[in-house]
Amino acid sequence: MPQWQGKSKGNKLGYRIFVYVIRYLGVKPAYFLLRFVAGYYFVTSWSSSRHIYAYFRKRLHYGRFSSLLKIYSNYYVFGQTLLDKVIVMAGIENKFTYHFDGEENLRDIVKGGRGGILISGHVGNWEAAGHLLKRLNTRVNVVMFDGEHERIKQYLEQVTGGHNFNVIVIKNDISHVYAIGQALQNNELICLHADRFLPGNKTQLLSFLGEDALFPLGPFQLSAGFKVPVSIVFAFKESSTHYHFFGSKLFERGEAESKQEFTSKLMTAFRDELEQKVNLYPIQWFNYYNFWEK
Image (tube, rainbow, N blue to C red; front, side, top):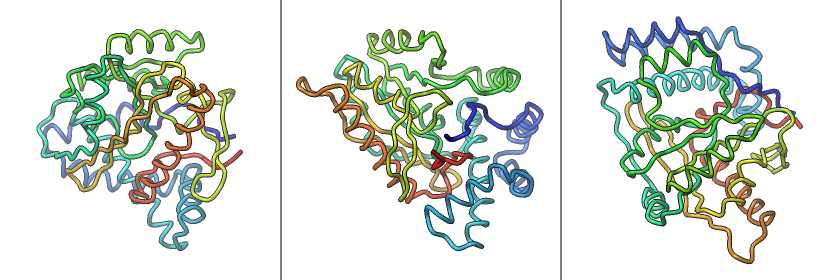
């Protein structure tokens, strides 16, 4: 079973330093400083680097030397996406541009008046582009594990003014399910990440990049149960200042379609979309554990 524990790396001092550099020196100096931070993680974080190496070497079939170089690139781009997230959410002046592919599908959800679900994964930078979805004139709710250390989360909220969308935290008492239902009744959007799970969650094996991997059942069963339109969405960094957003066609559970049938169909569609995007943007895969360990 993949040993992801729902927590993110980083510390409050690191965030504070980068926010200071961004505010007073600009984005480019912050990116320059990030090169050294990425080098530090490249050298010291073998526990995560070995899984990223296996991803490039075994799943994408890069050469040994190329796979090592890609580990550094992965850390560097991941750091960029974290900085970009803070820049956008804090309203810091920037030159970011965006291309929205499939925005009309999300607008169709809003027009339908029943709310809808957006399924994504830990690739690219959903939060930076998701912040821009406020132009859809509806609230976006992101469902997530509350894995960040409390001090870091509080500091980022001070810097950014809090999320410009609502966060629904997954809890053992399933209160998050009721919060999701209420948001859908208000014609709001729900974003679920569907490529990670904690021990004890229900999963299903799917072939992914040539080998079986475990995917969480929860996001797909939830989508099937609420019977609202679903779109598979991603946002990827294509240059230092440009993001590309993708929103798939809409999936809706038919009257004669069982919950299990729709769940299976949606899981396969998500797997296919994720596989395609990972091949297009290979260094923007940010799952730092053995995704294929069963």
